[in-house]
Image (cartoon, rainbow, N blue to C red; front, side, top):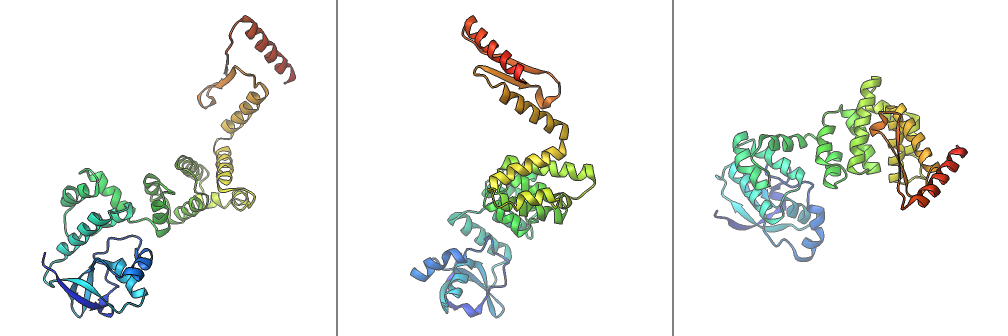
Length: 309
């Protein structure tokens, strides 16, 4: 590709045109110190469009330069006859080879290429270059991420929520989704607790014919979330246990009773085991002993503890 190098005034660049922008979030803030110190090392790529220049690559560099008050910078200029698909491909290849793409940028890439290519072409030509197999489900997965709110995208990039959970959130009503995103952004629970809390909330909402928002606005939940004495992990556990109690009161009660029983009968070498999910009333008692004398001692200790119950 033949480029012409020219010094271009930043006033002549159309910063509102994001047709070929594949960066999320904008990288300008992270480039300010570097550009202020040494300037723009790698010239951005532009294309003349009417009376302004269109950004093909280097939006972050140019926005940083603009914030720093730099009046003009050296740029690579594409011929005006270069078509949009070629411009998008140049942007894609430069970013892929220099820094790679985060998962939100990958979603943006496939969305933009679908303006010029068929789904089959994107699956065959673009997905492998993003590290995905040539499968329609991967295309659907990435396209769905584009519908996430900005707050959810931020949590996803910070690894606070998982991509799988993000897709589950898209199945919720907008208000419920916002409430969950705010909750997880505040508490930052692990992926397993996220899944459990969301599943319980969905089941409770369906069973009680309420929205997730209505459930989360219950005074008992507000009390946990606003309790400044608790850390985020502590709030998460209290919230989870409360929701679980509402969701399965009988199971929760049995778990609490079993926990108290194991504490009272805590003897080295002895273990109590309930049936899975407390489906049966029976409890298994296991005693580990070295010899008959050891067994008699443990049995005596157990009998003594049982008398105290």
